[in-house]
Image 1 (cartoon, one colour):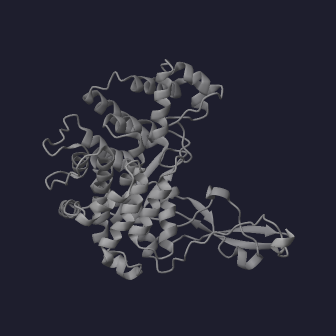
Image 2 (cartoon, one colour):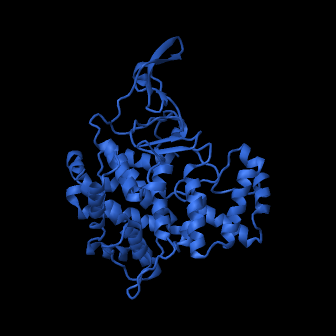
Length: 435
């Protein structure tokens, strides 16, 4: 864990008493005042609904400055990683703290590649799900079940689970995409396709999704590269809902498999992982209404329509991931032959309005990463209900790194937020015949 800098104090006054709260300063000059002793000293707790202004941990993994549109993994700007790195190289960085040497990266890739196949017993688990089951429900259940096949990695004995962490990392990084592809094949009524040893991470995923026993999937348009970029851009994002959920579960001593399974459940929510589905739904509704986006823009400005994929709770500037993925979307959609796709044309009109219309500029409603990711996933042939599954594959590195940060901190305590009770006061029990 990072060593906090405590150089000054904040004085908190409650009634006629004053309490000194030490200031913690981060490496990027972020400041927080430490209130951990306030309840014991004063009897008061702080109240911050949805934790929007609460620091729940000190972390060395990812830095975001929403006002300036900055995102860095372990200090490296996301723009540099997107241009020069790959998903697995950035994954290594996020989990282990440094960019790998060539030999380290080769060994890591080989370990992930060799872990792709699932135990044949897991194939039968899919028979227990109704055909119409949501893929996120399947993914969460299967990731938790995966731990049963690796009992030595999922002991809930923190020291033992840490000792097997490297092996568990390879298992989860590799098998999460295998399980995702298997759930897709189940829903479309096709046989499972086994991974190929020679294919790289994203290529192998597309192979397991879309190949047939008699014909391998042909990626002539560069979708694998765009997908790799999508995964890289989603690999971690500070203490978002799903990542903080993983840390919460890990704080109780739960193993890695159980913790990331909980992360999938948190990501499933439409306010977190389902935003790119909403973008596609919005674009389709605009198209079905016979609009090219211009009428919709005016409706959004008047408050009669909700603009999805614009703005971000964290970024008060342009989402840096959106700039990167927007360029990739244009390139891959053109290669596929989607450059005249009506939904893409509508998206372009909405984007242009956001960049030029004073209404959007003043409110800093710029396109976010979800605006473009949905277009790429749709073009790849991935159904909208699987968009969140794709997000989960990409976010796995951040979940793994955050679990390790919690598990390796010997001073870490179980997460246990307080509340302000607003229910009835004490009441006498009334026998049922008198109610």
